[in-house]
Amino acid sequence: MRDHPIFNDKHRAIRKTLHEFVTKELAPHADEWEEKGEFPSSVFHRMGELGFLGLHYPEEYGGQGGDYLCGVILAEEMMHSLSGGLAMAIGVQTDMVCALLHKVGSESIKERFLRPALKGEKIGCLCITEPDAGSDVAGIRTSFVRDGNDYILSGQKTFITNGVRADFAIVVARSRGSEGPKGISILVVEKGTAGFSVSRKLEKVGMHSSDTAELAFQDCRVPEDNLLGEEDQGFNQIMWELQPERLFAAISSVAGAQLVLDTTLKYVRERQQFGRPIGKFQAIRHRLAEMATNIEAARQLSYHVAGLINAGEFPAKEISMAKLFATRVAYQVADEAMQFHGGYGYMMEFPIQRFWRDSRLARIGGGTDEIMLEIISRQMI
Image (tube, rainbow, N blue to C red):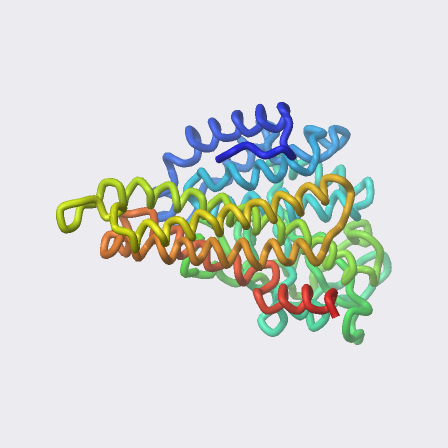
């Protein structure tokens, strides 16, 4: 991958260290973890031990004190694990769970949850989606009532990454009887809380090494100290959280697409048909050129947006543009690559099928293509 001006020597050193770790300690296990349907939780602890989970978090909470671009590098390098599920699970920890804990958590919450999460000692999950509410966050039905110094929480959540193994869940819920964006709050529910259970582990088309759960909350008693942020301000807090999640998806998608292209280039140079490598056919070469051009355009857009965030801006429209474009490009590249591989691309022993399956989720999670288009268009007209 060609270097970019937004990165400095410190960033380049972090990338080198991360790349060596991911390719040596994670990538060799990709096939095993995919077949098993999960990777060991010790990966979180190992990455926390090495400081990789806290790259862009303050040292006072156990982070490394780096800037936002350090997190961008993590998102890119995790794709070299050759497991989209693993990369996604780590991204949920670093850019969803820890991001919220740091942004709006009290000092008590930061000490009890953020610090151990950055060390990899506690794994978190973020619970927004419900059986009847996904992109429509204001339509959630999981609710709570106050009882003295506690909240009594009840409801269901689904499609929750890290939900099976999580030590705590960040749950978006509403005060009972409220409607729409008003009345939404965020509670941190610890594993072992009475009434909190994993209903089932969900089977997915892709991202096999990532555990995805359906969770149930039945009269869970949550102490008021576990309120994340301010009561009734949860909707705004979640709208903020979705932004780094979406850019993480864009950055990861570009990195994944580049890996697919590199793999495909190697294949078309070696695969012989009609007496010559298939990469010599103009029809193939031109499509490869389009793939490379689209990847580069997605990379430059994503880096531009990352640079704005690193400078302290909050470009919601541009973040949505980056997610929309990059995730579409990644899926198109994976689909074209599978076509070039022919029957081999459809076989489980070739990595292209995994990239193809895994890349599709990014156009759904964190806000669908349609939601991204709505956000962009609303800020245009």
